[in-house]
Length: 316
Image (tube, rainbow, N blue to C red):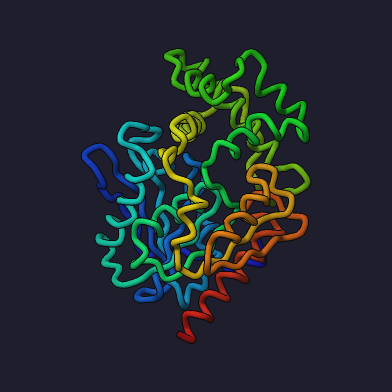
């Protein structure tokens, strides 16, 4: 973490209503009037952290972080109704309007956040100056199959714990389990799902300061996270009719792709394929790095690339 900018506090934070049901936690830090950059967190179902502000030069960037629908400090927590990819794209525009962001902005997206950044750029190309994307996830059937089946070759014990008693369709089984009326059963399913994800993330790499594995009785926050994530996965991230690889050929925004060579959650082949399709993109593979964006391998690479974006913007 020493490779990132020093910790800073927001100069603005609030809850923003984006629909009759959903309100989002939104914060702003860095330079008032600086170049706007919106951070899109992973998951789906995850949330922003204070450390996420530290990728960005606070003397240049107007740093906007927000928790997506049902996530983190957004309300109602864990809510999946009226929660889909196009709704999240609309939320980004609502945030732009509420914060009076004019002109083009940049996007920083990791994992699921890279998916959301690409979808936003497809719908609103005129508003995107540039993108920095990490741990590429394109929401394809092949990627989901890898996570629920293929990765078992590298983590057989973790996969055995995930699959015991759950049947062949793990996404459907866990989706039904985390929405079980029995709170204990739902919490235990959320814990098992999360433990598996964390074990896969840790293969060959470690994230300093990472949270320990969840306790046997998962917290409500963990259950809410799993519910949102499995809601998106069961519905093919609401992109079943869209191939992001094919669609990416039309995106012109300069894009830097940063990916760990040891990423077992989102295999590097996806980043490579995206780089082949995006006409104005550059791929940086990071040695000995996994999926976690705050790892000692990926964090400095991401800061370097965001600094390089700053320099390009300054020279325009």
